[in-house]
Amino acid sequence: MPGPPPKRDAERTRNNTPESGAARHGQLRPVTIPNADRKNWHPRALSWYEALKDSGQADYYQASDWAMAKVIADYLTLWYERPRAMDMANIFSMMGRLGTTEGDRRQVLRVELEPVVEEDKSATLIAIDGYKEALMRARA
Image (tube, rainbow, N blue to C red; front, top):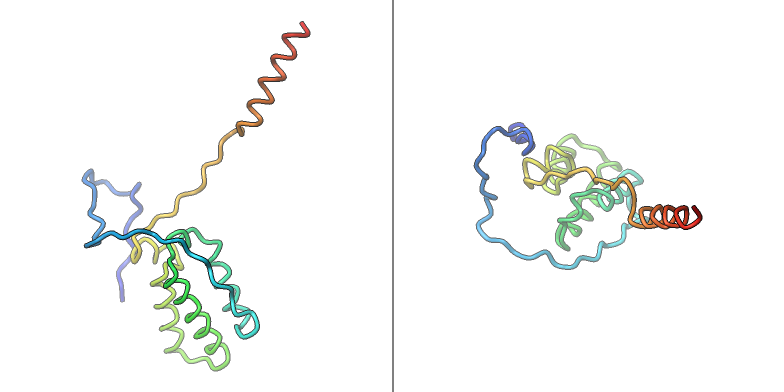
């Protein structure tokens, strides 16, 4: 059983940069996310697959990851039809390899998802405010 997930980078006290651990680096390829098998999958398997599409780790998924996700959804559907404890352990293990939970992402994929930082005002609103000020000065 794997140990606890590593700390977030912000929680680390060391100053050196850890190595990625990857022997070689490749390029991300364009990916088309395959459609879910809505007719044959159990509703919870379908829900899990759809949730993957909206999750941040999906930014890193390639075609083979999506193919694996479909295999997991098939397996999960079979489990709901005939549950067995050992099958659920296998399903969780496969889900973990895709970084389904935060701990899995940090431990297995070495990926941290950061919150989206929204700007206070969009450029459009800033421009509109500028026009309003210029209009008010012109009237004065």
